[in-house]
Amino acid sequence: MASAKVTINSPSGLKITIPTGIFIDNEFRPSLQGGQTFESVNPATGKTLCSIARGSVSDVDAAVASSRKAYKTVWGKKSTPGQRAAALFKWAELIEANAQELAELESLDNGKPVWMARDFDVADSAGCIRYYAGLADKIEGKTIEQVEGEKLAFTRVEPLGVCGQIIPWNYPIQMFAWKVGPALAAGNCVVMKPAEQTPLSALRLAELSIEAGFPPGVLNVVNGFGADVGDAIAKHMDIDKVAFTGSTATGRRIMASAAASNLKKVTLELGGKSPVVVFESADLDQAVNWATMGILYNQGQDCTAGSRLFVQDSIYEKFMPKLIANFKAHKIGDPFHPDTFQGSQVSKVQQERILSYIEAGKAEGAKVEVGGGAWTEGAGEFANGFFVQPTIFSGCKKGMKIVDEEIFGPVLAVAKFSTEEEAIQLANDTAYGLGAGVFSNDSRQCMRMASALEAGTVWVNSYVALSNAVPFGGMKASGMGRELGVDAIKEYTQVKAVHYNY
Ligand code: NAD
Image (cartoon, rainbow, N blue to C red; front, side):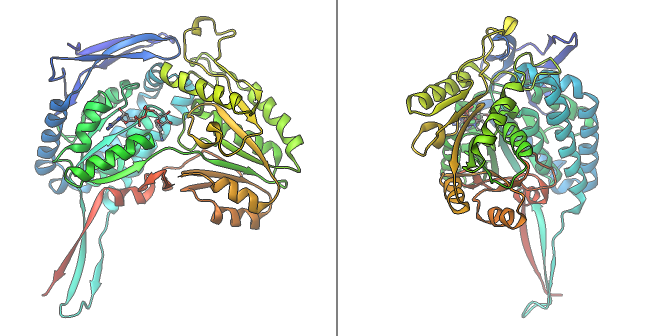
């Protein structure tokens, strides 16, 4: 049986105490299936951190019943936008007040550098919750005058009801915030399933949500595995919408389950194989820095990772040495060291998956320019961690696995192009359409590229940075629906038309 709370001794000296149970009705309790548990591992050391309650189908049922009750009695149309905003504003404040602890927890569970988790993941998450707190009282319908045969029609913008949210392990806190922020602001109740690799920060966020003043049942968190908790959410007959971020394969399964159950609404934020195109007029140092950031940020475990780099042939020989030097300059290792840029991959499974892609790249004839294996040399106390060397392959072509498939690691596939037309063709030659980058000092060329690239987000002379106010999502096989910005509110509301004959 999961103990009620566990204290983790962080390498910084901080003692981090978190609840370990399933979070339902503002209480943490053991799993309904025999109090079963699973272990959370620190991927930088390979050592177990703690045991967590492992949810089951019965726990999902209990969470949905609790959320439905809260929706009908205290949230949804029984709450005011002001009440919802107040709880969200307070929660954002509490997240900020606990930023260091949350960042260390996130790093211990995920392997990412603490400073990155604190200054980006946690800071952006508090910002996201605050952004949606501010939007809660700005959700508006419209009036349509002089409707034929009647006097007036107007629209009501209403919440959907109970939303199931299934998130991945690459940005556990941020994905949590992106999903619950708009859902709760719009009046929905949430059953959240964190990834089994990174269950910890969600438990602390849930604990803080009680302090923020959310009534019981508005937010429930069921940790556990995809095959039972995730699948139960996707198939549940009393969940109105499922929002998912993760792999394309799981996204397909979730959509099929939603269609075969109660036709719940679905939004999917799936994988990518995003292109970055560098033209000869570009500021090369700027392009090198962003292209490096684009693939190494978050250990390459980013759905928009700029994993295919196309460099115009006229600048290729000047560009590559700069890029290789920049890769070598990024410090890998101890996630608690302030100089570390690259921590460990999230798990042994993920590390092995990335290494198998690296071997495939070598076997298929691409040239290793830097990296090309696990990081072990000089690893010291991190020798059992799941690290991968920042790796560049050149001479990459369509048909190679490292060019066609999402690796989700610090592995960059580079190729040359000669004309803008060829760059567009190469960049768009993928089933995915999440992100794309273009580097050029020709503003007309930038505008042409922004139009031609088939991606939900195009960065011009930058990469990977997002804003809570700007919509984010995929084209093609990268998903459907948008997160962030005002657009996300639309994904968590439905429009009712009222014809009024007065
Ligand atoms: P995954 O898609 O299987 O897992 C993501 C989430 O979905 C987790 O919470 C998981 O428990 C849940 N899940 C798994 N199976 C489910 C099911 N049948 N029904 C409902 N929920 C289910 O991803 P993974 O196996 O952890 O990683 C595999 C690959 O997916 C990665 O290498 C990467 O390429 C990709 N990925 C992409 C993202 C992204 O942000 N786009 C995030 C994580 C992983």
